Length: 61
Image (cartoon, rainbow, N blue to C red; front, side):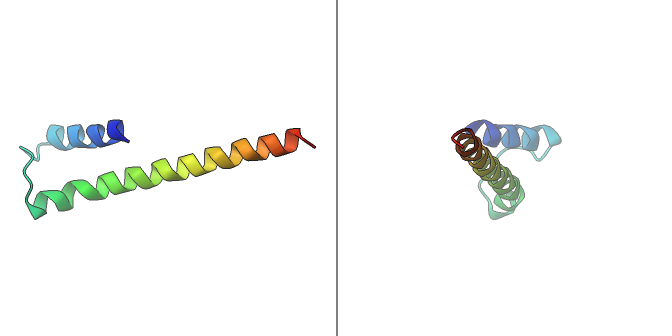
């Protein structure tokens, strides 16, 4: 998750939003991207765990 957060911060700085400051306007700009990446990470984790358990269950039949 740290790499994803760092990537988003790097994209934000490269696009030209300027120096990172902690005003509410800047937080509103960066945190939605971080939340989306976190949700995608959790979705991928759930899918991979479900696949692992399904494969293990099928191999035991």
